[in-house]
Image 1 (cartoon, rainbow, N blue to C red):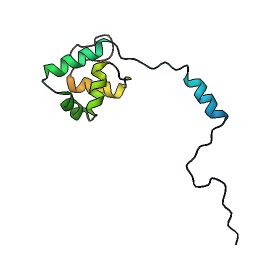
Image 2: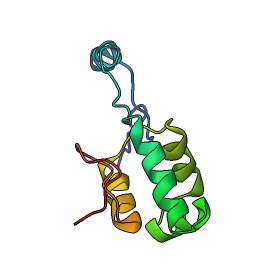
Image 3: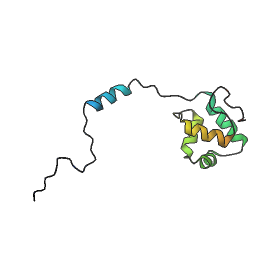
Image 4: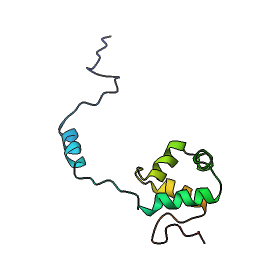
Length: 104
């Protein structure tokens, strides 16, 4: 019985090709979403009103403290999931037109 192994078989390597070039070229045109400038202030105000630290808020929404810091400094790329968890934890709107107002 002859056993032949294929070149690169069993390795987790992806060879660069035409598709990779297309992906790299298409990424240049993508604009990253940004936080509304009033969102970081609304997060800080709501957190301070509840007398919570960034670490406590992060623990409450099951995120790293660095994530809270990024959102409060305005440097985060907004995630709808994180914004939703922050809204629920702080009981304040962080999306839409009524940013900073209490949830109903």
